[in-house]
Amino acid sequence: MNVQIKLISCLLNYPDESLLRWLPEFKQVLSEIESISVRNKYDQMLSYFEQTPLIQLQEQYTETFDLNPSNCMNLTYHRWGNTEKRGSALVHLEDVYLKAGFERVSSELPDFLPLILEFVSERPDVADSEIIPLYGTVVETLAARLQQSGHPYALLFEQLINIFGLSEAAANSQA
Image 1 (tube, one colour):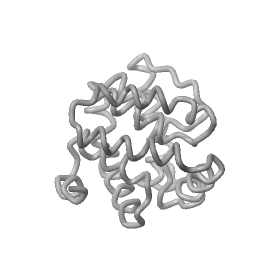
Image 2: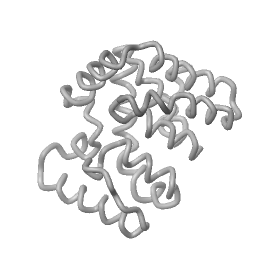
Image 3: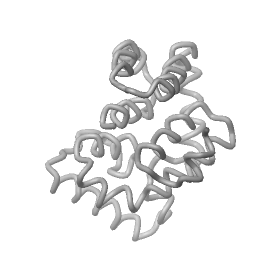
Image 4: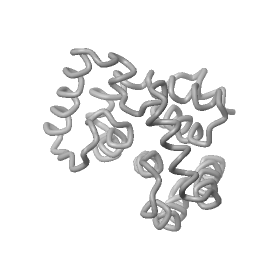
């Protein structure tokens, strides 16, 4: 599961030339996934990245996640908006990271989904108690929104629902 979480973390970052250079490596990682149907889903996503011009990938990513607050990948925003509670939640996440020995090197806020997934892939024990119970429903909501619009990234969110054992209804809707 950690391999899948790390892969999803990489694929949910802003697409750039570096991401495209890593696609062959990501394909090799797929061989570590036992389930053929799961491998095929990731392969669809990697094919999407290979077949879509970079500028189009970037435009779609920006339009979907940066310009549309309802799809924002800063998870505390979905729970608390821009309130003091969100500020406390961000401090809590940063504290969770530091206590687990995870030093954040990106400029992203600690609630940025790809960053959270990177942490989860390294410290699933902490994430199971400190992060997933708080933000699992946000992942489900994002998955539902992306599924409804037929967005290619929906596949990655569906995989997260399966990996984290979130809502059975949401997981079954992809079958």
